[in-house]
Length: 359
Image (cartoon, rainbow, N blue to C red; front, top):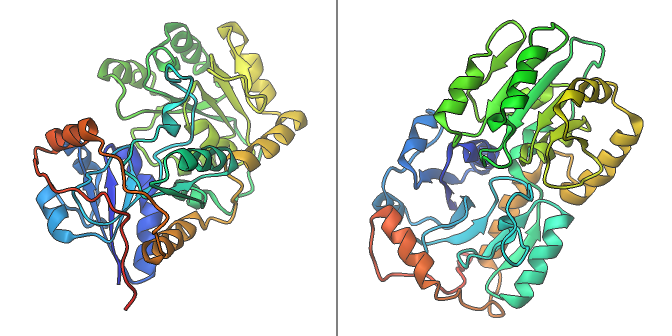
């Protein structure tokens, strides 16, 4: 039996970990959870076995650590595996014009990538930083989307609204968007469901919740898959929820999106929002065709078995010969920061590639 740890920070990582938990338990292995942010614990349910302190994590001695966050303590045991908490939304390029999704932080032994568009980049990075390996598996969070369900375009239009928490990119922070959605919600032509990032400012949450009524419902949840399935189209800004949603081959209307992706229906002038909603609800064939081509680049897996591939990649990796893998970098500043965050200071560190011998 293998001991897995699902390591997270924010509550939005829980739906990423749940399919992994199911896969692990179905195999007869052990899985426990840990969050390095205390507020996240209120979002766990009885199905998760939770560790509350870093000392408990150390005592647990995991074999494999599935990381749905950007950092992980170097002083705990186990193969450190980056699973990702979202798709690459292309929100914040660095000074070198590289997005944070692709930042190599020096903590991980294995990257389980979502599709070719990320795999290619990380494999190039592995040549420069040979302390990790890369396996393309697909992404666990979207397993429950598949198989895709039939949806009726002739039913009452349901529009899902999702927004990033980054103020300069967020439609939720835009007052003109708020006014237009408020107006459209009174016409009776659509029903809106809205979700916001758990890190969203409380005053913004309160503002949008004030629209609750017959044709607008604010959903206080991080479990978005049921809302994706119910919605006909998505209205968003620059959030990784867009890629998750369009895997269903449904259109997304995006406001001031930071990319020029042609599979999206872009809007920059708020007075055009209604006409673009109506266009998207017709499922224009040219947009659907581009969506189908695009999703093959960032997630070409439609079997709902990405969690299975991730766990199999981990177990294969933990036993394979790693003599060709370098030790992880010293990473002194990041190691200090994570010790400070967890209030646990130790000189212990695992820099060697983690390996278990088969019995």
